[in-house]
Amino acid sequence: MRAVLGARVLARVEGRGFAYTWPTGRLFGARLDVLWDFDEKVVSAAASRLLSRKYPYRGNELNWLGENARSQRIWQIRTPHALVFPPGYPSWESELRTLTPSDRVRTGIRHAFDDGPAGVPYVGVMIRTAPNAHDETLRHSPLEWYLARMNQIRDAWPDVPFYVAADTPEAFHAVRQAFDRCYGTLDKGRYNSKRALVASVVDLYLLASSAHLIGPHFSSFPQLAQRLAGAELRLETSMSATDSVMLTSRGLTFAPDPIRPFNRRLVG
Image (cartoon, rainbow, N blue to C red; front, side):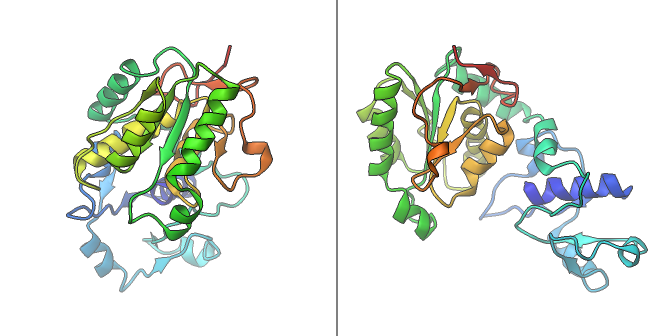
């Protein structure tokens, strides 16, 4: 998302057309326009590779952006990273906040919110324990850390609900058994299937709407939720600095409308 949205910002500022590549298949089962309302031209991966013979792929740092590049008809950017914009450019995060989830995702968000923590501030919990998680994540963010940290949060804020986005049923069950007022979706379908990806975007918006977010170390998903919400939502991991650790609910904000998690209200 950060690469696609950053490229769209770049195209708009530079006065150029925009198209994007979004491969789908067995490893990733949902088009971008299945997840968000996104009416932009799509170029197939095969066509992009063919174009790269004349228009080679460029990197995210934009050190290539100059008069020579501006004289060329097509720019192709391929990167997993956010684009490094010159001063004065809009951010990809601001572009993300302009997007509207698709009808299917909006329905899922409303159901998850109404069946869970609707109307009250809550703490979002994103858990990565599946074997395909990064080694750094599995090493520094074991399930035991979440359970201990959630106990500490309940000591400081006894009646706070939790919204849990877990990548395995086992982790979700363990947390549900340990805590009451614990919400989330259990059956999300096969990993990276269309159903699972729709459920992931539902989780993204519910996590972004929380008053505080705890998540796995070395994982981009909770970072995306925090960027969607804005700087008022703090993300805490097992490796966070002290100023990101929640000690009290005082000064926290939450989003009353989970479709717009960046519109926030002070807790209390």
